[in-house]
Image (tube, rainbow, N blue to C red; front, top):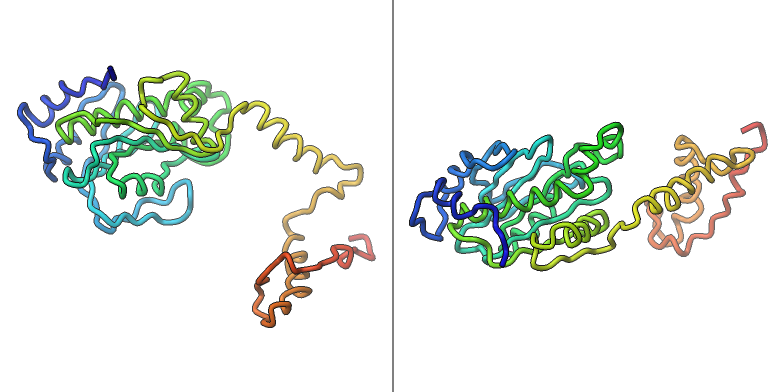
Length: 280
């Protein structure tokens, strides 16, 4: 049997005994006063329709077409998370956790919108840090643990408790969906916290992370920088020159000079044409 995070106690405390399953806008606002271990609920408000989510991992605005209850919070020390709850008449009775991409550093709003559109109560987090690079890991083992496994588990526990309080009953099933780094999160959940989810969709998981980062990335960069004469490295300021030459050579192949290659596969460009005759 699944062990939900004190949901019955929470429901009684926040919404009152005998609460019906039809959640109201007022029930959403009441979640702001919910007490969860090591967690601060920073807001609980009714959002949408046509709510535009903050720009996060993917710099494309996410506009949510339907109304929902939006809960934001922080799990100590610095795990920002959000739970989106559809109205009772649109809830499919299920819960979904969504993963991140790359090194995380932001909430995956696009995936949350997809889950919400399909009737799920959904949660996501920034895995305990902001920013898409790996600087969060420098001299911060606790933040590394949050990124590695703790944040995904904690957002799941808190998300389920909030869903239970809002609807007056526990979700029937819980699923996790993630790709790349999100796929890694799914596998870690299965290994460390098998009771969190009934099913996990782990796409393209970045497993064997030490090998991935050293052999798959660092080695390539070192090989590029360490060529005998430095010729393996093309500085960023020279890229526009190369791009312009490619367009000039192949733009007219589709019959229109518009600065766009209709089919790059048809372009025959010889980089040697740009070879310098002087020092550079």
